[in-house]
Image (cartoon, rainbow, N blue to C red; front, side, top):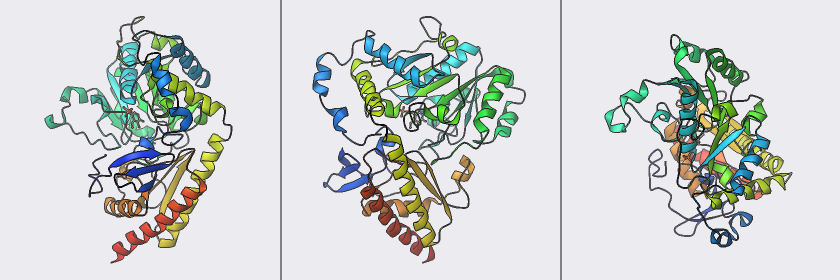
Amino acid sequence: MRAGAAVGGAPFMQSRGYGPYAFDNDGRRYIDYIMAYGPLLFGHAHPPLVSGLDVLAASGSVFGSTHDNELRLAQRIAAYVPSVQQLRFVSSGTEAVMSAVRVARAFTGRPLLLRFAGNYHGHFDAALFGAGASAHAMLVPESGIPAGTAADVIVARYNDPSSVDALLAGRAHQLAAILVEPVAANMGLVLPQTGFLNALRARADAVGALLIFDEVVTWLRLGLGGAQTMLGVAPDLTTFGKAMGGGFPLAAFGGRADVMESVAPSGCAFTGGTFSGNPFCIALGHRVLDLIENDETLYPRMDERAQRLAAGLRSVLQEVGFDYAVTQLGSMVDFKFRAGSAVTNYDQALESDGERFATYYHAMREGGVLLAPSRNELMFLSSVHGDEEIDETIEAARVALRRVRNRTLG
Ligand SMILES: Cc1ncc(COP(=O)(O)O)c(C=O)c1O
């Protein structure tokens, strides 16, 4: 992703970040919508998050023992996410999802994992077939993924329960878990259609499998209860990451107590991690929750700014004559270079025009706006993206989209 292969040209080299801004090696300032691919809910180097870190580290940055703050953070999370009765901390989203899948397989005693094309769950083997983001793993020896792994992974179409049924025909009794991003953020922003997540809940229940929500992006982006609270569907297991560490590596997986009992030492499913639950990142996790709890207007404010950006993009797109749908949820905004209504699955997302996106990406960069260099990504706002930055972004988009149009016509 960072190499920028999808858009060509030299990769963006960043020297520092502050607030809503990224700076390149020449000190030029860009309004940053990568936001580290999600974690920076409060922007770069937010003072309440990055002050006093030397004091924090002075009492030990990693113990190898458990500690009160770890237990307290688990309790705070569980209080906001009722489907989570027990939880274990890890250091990355990849570890969180990989561990949740292992626990689901251990609990059910079954091998099969059902996932969705265009979702991304990290870079462990089973997660990569049909994955979104910048992962394009194929089953060839060069990918490093053994063919045997593919035998126990099936990849369905997002927002299409009938594709789930078709793929499960004759294999439902082997199904350990359905793993899904409840709001998909790795093929651009794709919202779950009404009834989709409920249908997955029902399918999992009907065949004695578990439902895993990957909330690595959505928890805290969409509020303290995550997508599951917003959408009213409870999974058996949930994975957390990104925003929870306030820009530091902290992630977790958790869920039903009877399922989590499968984790060693109470059960046989082993998970580890030298840095798991380290006191430094756990303290950052507390700071993040403190900041959210003490700012009632945080989510409405971010939502309002994201709506302002989405509305601005809609009007600029209309102005240049592109019939592209703009999608927004909370602090996430996206549009695809594809005519018609909003994308609902990965097949549609892949219809978007990569060449137009590349022109747009570079024109935005010239205009002082940093986007992720891939049409599979979306724009992440933070609490410090203000009206001024939004208006500057819309103006840059006007210039960039005109250039795309002129190139297309010319
Ligand atoms: C939904 C989702 N799950 C899991 C991951 C993997 O997280 P990490 O990169 O921290 O390993 C990502 C990363 O982008 C993600 O978007």
